[in-house]
Image (cartoon, rainbow, N blue to C red; front, side, top):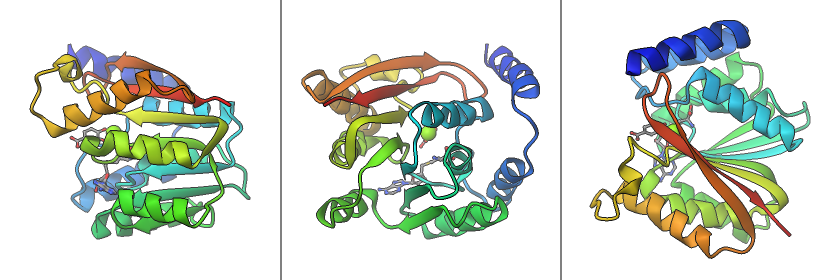
Amino acid sequence: MTSTWADVDDFFTTHLLPADDALSSAMATSVAEGLPPISVTPPQGKLLQLLAQMVGAKRILEIGTLGAYSTIWMARAIPRDGRIVTLEIDAHHADVARRNLERAGVSDRVEVRLGDAAQSLAAMRASGETPFDFVFIDADKKSSDVYFYEALALSHPGTAIVVDNVVRDGKVADAQSDDPDIQGIRRMTERLAKEKRVTATAIQTVGGKSYDGFLLAIVGA
Ligand code: SAH
Ligand code: DHB
Ligand code: MG
């Protein structure tokens, strides 16, 4: 089925996603620099842009930058005086990301913060960082629950939080899984069940990147 899924992605990409030099060069540079091919797909990137537009986001937090492919999509959603803070642990990824953001003409709006995301988030919370309107969680999956709760602490009523890769070929349904990534996603979801401050759903997806899914949450009052 995966070739059909990729064909369908190609069809919609051709018709709904105008060619964009910044995005295609960011992808090409990431490949040439040896980054793993795990960025969001073009239709998923555009979904992030549209979701951020739907909440009128001006301030966006991203956890897991890679080569800033998803970051550039989200930068398309914010006004010139908006801001994206994106967290990345790998210095080479951060370096490629900064170059891609520069070429995309959005580096004035985006800050790539190098370091372990859990530490960066704790520091942001401690320093009273202004809350974000939109959060995209896409780093190491084993820490999903930590990232979700840190993101919640940096949110306001109305903030939308998207978590990538919550399905993982269906492995998330396996309560017995010994994969720390699956355990992290399950822990986050189980905590969310009891969390009164957010309302959430999760959607399974297929596409160029096979079978996975995302979780979408809105922070309430
Ligand atoms: N959002 C990107 C893809 C991110 S891939 C896109 O769609 O284009 C996941 C990234 O998270 C990788 O670059 C990886 O180095 C980074 N990462 C992994 N563990 C991390 C951690 N503890 N803190 C911050 N970043 C981390
Ligand atoms: C992986 C990470 C991602 O963010 C993704 O979208 C797909 C795969 C991974 O670490 O395998
Ligand atoms: Mg991902």
